[in-house]
Amino acid sequence: MNIFKRNPFGHNLFIKKWLIRILGFLSHTRFNRFNKLKIEGSDVLRSIPKNNVLFVSNHQTYFADVVAMFHVFNASLSGRDDSIKYVTYLWQPKLNIYYIAAKETMKDGLFPRILAYVGSVSIDRTWRSKGEDVNRQVKMSDVSKIGIALNDGWVITFPQGTTTPFKPIRKGTAHIIKKYKPTVVPIVIDGFRRSFDKKGIRIKKRNILQSMEIKQPLEIDYENESIDSIVEKLEYAIEQHPSFLKVLSQEEIIQLEKNNKKREW
Image 1 (cartoon, one colour):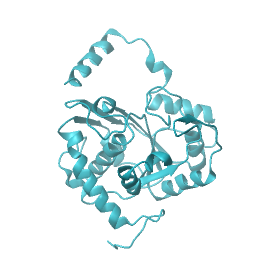
Image 2: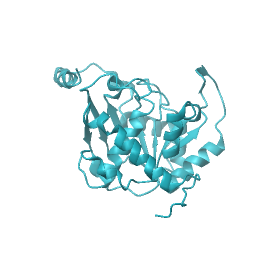
Image 3: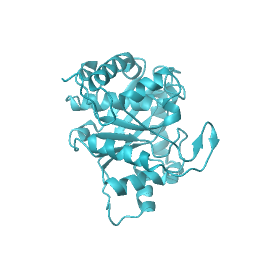
Image 4: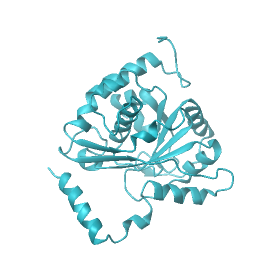
C-alpha cells in the first residue's frame, strides 16, 4: 500500500488503516466479551455495491453505534456470518466507510478527533448547536461532502439526528437520497443505550444483549417518490415510526420479556 495515498478528504489511508486496527482491537471486547452483539443480515453487506451506499439507522449512543458497525461491516466482508469473533478481520479493513456526524461533537476532545479521522463526514447541524435550538440554513458544502463520501464508498447516517428514540426523521436525509440516488440499507440496533453511557465510551452495564439487524435495501423511486414518502419509508425501516409504540400482543410481550431477561446483569 502506498503510504502517501489519501482519500478524497485528504486523510492518509495508511494512518487511517492503523487507527482502525488499533481502535478495533481496543473496542472488540465491548461487543464480544463484556456484552454480546447479536447480528442479523451480514450477508446483505456482501451483496451491495462497493460505493454509493447509504446506511440509515436508529441512534442510541454517540460513538458505540458507529464503532460496532465498523466491526460488523468488516467482519462480514471478510466472510464471517453474523459474527465478529476473532478481530483479525480488521487487518485489512474497508477504508471507504464514512459516517455523518455533528461537527461540534467530533471536535469535543481528543478521542472524537481520532474517530473523525477514521471516517467522519462532519457537518453543521441546522437545528441544534451547543445545547440550544437553532434554525440555520443547510450548507451546500455539507451536502457536497456527503456526495463525495457516497461516491467513494459507504456512508452511515442516523436520520433522526439524536439518540432519543421515536424522534422525527430529518427531511435532509430524504433530500440526500433524492439527489444522489444511493442504495439505501436500513439498520436497527438495540441494547447500546443500556450497555454504554450516552457518548458510548464508558461501559455502564455488562452482559447486555446488544443487537444489530441489517435489512434488505429499500425500494425507492428516486424520480417520482415524494420527500414525505421517503421519510415515512425510513421511519418504518428503522422501526422509529409512531406505530411501533402500539400496544403489544401477549406473544410479543412474552418475547420482549425473554429478551429483557438476557439484557439484565
